[in-house]
Structure formats: structure tokens, C-alpha cells
Image (cartoon, rainbow, N blue to C red; front, top):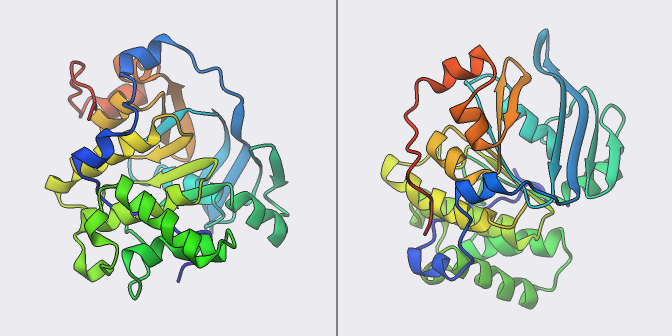
Length: 290
């Protein structure tokens, strides 16, 4: 059951609809120019345990406006838990979270504070998280009407605009069971974008897709993330190398390494990072350009 702020996009755009958006910069261009945006999101000393298992250990993280941060690492390293704590899908045990100037002590947040902070983010889930009894259009309008208090006619127009952006012009009235996994994920992406969040959170958005659909969704994310502030938990190393402005490597609940894609992938500072990345072949000569 989703509440008004766990509305997340799930769709796959066709190449033509996405191509009209501004093309993302190459990884070389991103590495060449340091990001100078103001701080959009900051967490200090965030910790989370499940029983005796410490999943997050005093994490500090700052994300500037317009940055695309890819979080990589082995399964069980705390990546998804960190993302879910940022959107209050999990309650952190301690720490301070600031998004767009609004701060809260995570150990003692009020319901009002949590709602205000959640409304500054939107999340794209790995399992789509669509309302099964609603059409693609209704899955997008639900959050606009409930969370943003938008009138139905206005919400409908905006929903169709974002569904068009992700290549689903002919699927407005389709329900999830009538859509492929990639199309459902595009609906989720449209839903998140329509909320106009300060930060978009992507939780392994391709993990539930058939291999042949993965690149379609990565292409969509590449375009929508260009110019946005985004945090992406991913196992797609080539995508992280090409699209992110920063890459964070997590292991055992801690941030082990944080740098540009070239710094982390080409010259890792720690043995653990190098060991993890040694299993992947990164093509330095391609770019995710649509």
C-alpha cells in the first residue's frame, strides 16, 4: 500500500520522445568541471540497525544541486537502506537530514517534519510500486491530487505531459497488467518527475527488468537525470561510470570511497574498492548519449 509520497515512476520512453530533451554531458565533460551548485541534500551521522545488525554506520553525505550521485557496492552494503532512510520508508536510528534547507533530527522527527521532507523527494522503486487497479495516467495523477492538492483536470494534463516524455503516449489508459516491466518502470519515472521533487531517488531501477529492457530504462534515466539532483543506487557499473557526476562505493554500512567516476573506477584509493570493481569491465570509450 502506497502513501501520498511513495509514488514512484515506472516507464520506458521511446528514443524519439526522449531525444527532445537536452542531451546529458559526457563523463569526460562532467569530470572536467567541478560542480558548484548549492547544497541540496545533506546527512550527518545517519545510523540504522535491524536488531543487532548495524546496516548504516554514522554516514555523512552531502549532495549539491544538480549532482547525479551513483551509489555502488555489494549486496547488503546498506545502499538501499540509506536511500529509504532519506525518504522515511525506513526510520533511521539517529542522524540529521537536510533537504533544500529544511532540517530534522532523525531520532525525533515529528509526522509533520517527515511529510515536509518527503515532499521534497520522489522515489523510483525497483519493483515499480504501481497501483494495480489504476491506469498509467491515474498512477501519475494520484500523487498530484493527494500530495500536491492539484485539481483533477490540471493533474491529468500534467500526467499526460510526463507520460509523453517517457514515451508512453499510447498507454495513458493502460493498467499495469497491460504493460511490460519496462513500461511500468517508465510510468514510475513519470510519476516521480511530475511531483517536481528537489531530489529524485532511484533504487536499483533496472533490477526487476529483463536484460533486453535494461538499456531502455537507463537511457530514460540518463535524460531525466541531466540537470536534476539525483541519487541512484545501481549495479550497472557502465551506467554509473558514464552518467554520474559522483560515485560512492559503500561496503558494510560505510562509505568507503567517494569521487568522480574516473577517480573511483580508474584510480580507486582503497583495496576494497579495487577488489569490488575488478569484476567489471568498463568501456571508457562509450557514452550514454541518446
